[in-house]
Image (cartoon, rainbow, N blue to C red; front, side, top):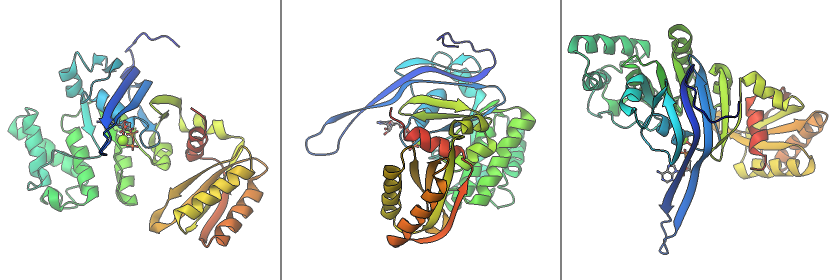
Length: 343
Ligand SMILES: Nc1ncnc2c1ncn2[C@@H]1O[C@H](COP(=O)(O)OP(=O)(O)OP(=O)(O)O)[C@@H](O)[C@H]1O
Ligand SMILES: [Mg+2]
């Protein structure tokens, strides 16, 4: 359907033809006004009960979109609704229906415990004291903060993972039907991230919540998202289930070489391969333990040669290889393909 009429039936979140331009100035002596078009006609529709993942490179406009949907920022143009309520004209109703978790968690009190922080927000939301206490206890258990002692720890003494859990608990206080989470697993260790993902999946599957999240973690998107939208330069450039999106790269293999070395060496090698093999694309990704992966999207037929040559080049340049393999393309490869395309 290519009309612009907003039909809210069935959609939990709808942003239609959103535009947002920021003006900033450079910090130099000769101050220059800089114009940033963060959103350029972005349309995203999230059906009820779905986990929707927004992917996109740094600066693509994901957080800007999240802020508009959560009534924190006004768009220059376009329409946005949550459960049919307009984010501009019905902002209070929108806020009642959403739980929000932004990656930069502000607003918690450093000298209060997890329990006290949540109780404070519950009271702010107008919950009666008894109900608030019960809800807070329940949520501290649900997000696993109780077992970590995060109910009693001051916010300032909490690890990143504990803070993320507290952020999710706060988003769930009002038991909202819609959750909007900006990079909820950013900086978490693998176990904490997995636990948070399981929690999100449960909330969607068992309680029918709609979840919009942004992430840079492709594995995460593949693992938990029903639908993935890829944005680039403020526009939606691809959308579908992870398996639908992967069909976009079915004529490719994914060559992955992991090891230790400087990023420059990995980048140089990637550029060399892409120059030599037309149709190939690459990306360098940071892994655990200070390793880097060079991921090359290889047209079917060139994969073995590309693998051998990539390893050779990296070794020649002084990198130490810990793993090299050819696999079926993943969502990451879809992303690499799209990112490499001209605007
Ligand atoms: N308040 C602001 N003032 C000026 N520019 C801004 C502001 N907020 C965002 N931008 C710019 O708008 C663009 C989109 O930013 P946004 O934060 O939405 O990207 P993102 O997709 O969330 O990126 P990331 O993956 O790095 O979080 C960027 O170029 C950013 O620098
Ligand atoms: Mg962001």
